[in-house]
Image 1 (cartoon, rainbow, N blue to C red):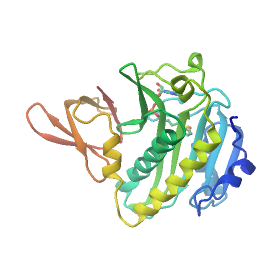
Image 2: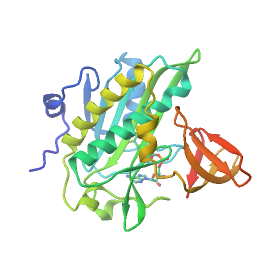
Image 3: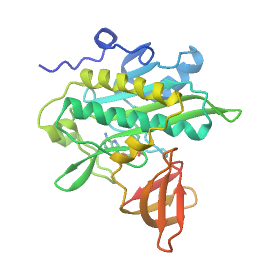
Image 4: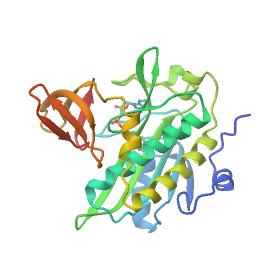
Length: 269
Ligand code: BT5
C-alpha cells in the first residue's frame, strides 16, 4: 500500500527531527514553494528548518528563469529554510547536502541508483543514457557578506507517468517510470528531511560534504563544455573533481586548471 499523503498530520507523525521540518507546512497548490517560503520567511519570521511542500506548483522555478513542471500529486516539491551564518560561498554546501540526502533516500526506498550532475541535477541511467529525475534551486539572501538566510528548493519526479514527463535538454524520468511501481512520497520526504538535518548539523562543525558528494558526480573524468550564461563564454575541458565548496575543477586542452562556480553556468557533456 502506498501512503502518499503529504499533509501536516501525516508528515509530523513520522518525523523524528529536532529542527528540520519544524514547522512543516503543506499546500495543495502554490505558485512556487521557493517563492512562498522566501516571502513568508520574512513576513512571518519563520525559523530555520521550516519546510514547505506542495502538491502542485503553478509556476515552479528552475535556475536562470527556467520552469519546473510536474502534474498535481505526482512529485515531491519541497523548500527548506536555513539561516546559517556562513560566508556566502559556503551556500553551496546546502545544495550538496540536500542532493546527497535525496539520492540516499531514493536508494533506500527504491532500487533506483541516483547520480548527481554538477551542480544541481539528480539523475539516473536508463539504457546507458542519463535521465533527470530531480533538480535543486538555492536562493540565498546575503547581507554584510554573510549568508543571512537561504531557501533550498528540490523537485523530485516520483509518480509521474512517462507521458507526463517534460522535455528538457536532459531527458526526464520519474521513479515510477524507472522502478515500474509507485513510490511513497511520504516515506521519501521523511527520510530526506532526517538526512538533511544530519547533514547540516555535520556541516555546522565545519566539515564539507565534498567527499561524499564528489563520489556521486557523473561528470568526473568526462569532457564538459561550460557556458557562462551571462557572457556566453565557453570552456571545454575535463572535469577533474570539486573543491571543498563544490566548485568544479576543469582542465582545458592546454593543461590549465579552471575553477567553475555554479552561479550562471550551464554544463553539457
Ligand atoms: C532545476 O533547475 O533543476 C531546479 C528545479 C527546482 C525545482 C524545485 S520544486 C520546489 C522548489 N520550488 C520551485 O519553484 N522550484 C524548486 P534547472 O537546472 O534550471 O532545470 C530546469 C530545466 O529542467 C527546465 O528548463 C526543463 O528543461 C527541465 N525540467 C523541468 N521540469 C522537469 C521535471 N519535472 N523533470 C525533469 N526535468 C524538468
